[in-house]
View 1 (cartoon, rainbow, N blue to C red):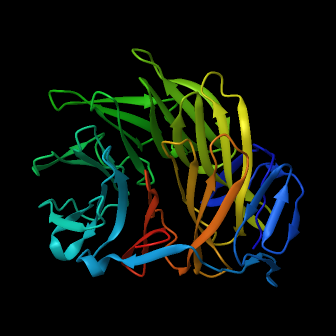
View 2 (cartoon, rainbow, N blue to C red):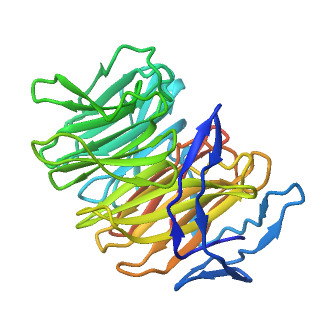
View 3 (cartoon, rainbow, N blue to C red):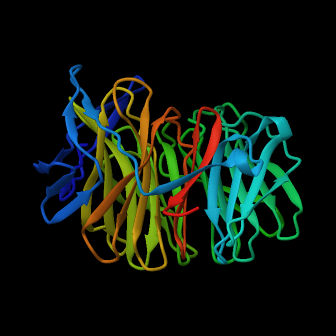
Length: 401
């Protein structure tokens, strides 16, 4: 397996005619020894990992999973696909997913004792493209559903089990890619960002109305937004035509540009004074790289950068999810294609608090769903992942059941 870790230049990448191209990103050289790859002062180890060369010109990866317990969620009566995963303050997991046999939006909860319960929401919002989920401080559940035509639907479940849904955003039909993201602030206010002739921020008021604010220029190429809450400050990153870009909105202030990032499909997490971004950057001609950047929230200065994985340039979608646990360890999960076909590997990387060493493991091989429906949540007992393969959902966690 080819793994590259260490310093990397945050380059730029663009999009022309629907294809992903490189505008000049670069990485340091690497030394590969067996399943371990080193660069700079960082090391990534994956049991059984190795590197090989694909005869078609791409990077062929050997997939050797280990260290994760996989549980088909159908074993717990959870049948569906297109899921989102979050954890509440008590450590319970909350899963939202598409369940056509039960009327649309499905919901399941995993208690801290490991038991799963399911519930029908009674909401049938139609066939969405993208789903994200967040929990508030009292374990209320909030869901954003994005559609191809830029329509957005907000659904919520209060702690008593009452469901509601409503349409938000601009009229459908605007330019967008169906991606959206939801986050909750400390006051329990939902914030949704989505693509609709540019990036739009939607904030829900106490009277259930929504305030819509464009972020930056109304550029149709601005897509794939992600949002995170940093105290009372909101932070958003997204893809644009010539790379990625991040913004912040201070308390009572307006949206302002903070710093560019070197790729697309960003995922965002926050820790005190730090912003963590995982993203994808083409590395022409051989690969698409999964990247990581740690930035200062004060001025956007890069603190640490790394290349976590690499896959063949054709078919490597590599959507990622990122989270920080209470100890300060960073977790990244992504899907990367193994060859020029649709087979892919689901991987997890962990960086110790305050360190520069990443440990990467393969959760599963032969994953055929490259779309961004893998979910990541971290609790006191470690990372939890739900992913889709062949129209079915699987729950994964390190070690035991």
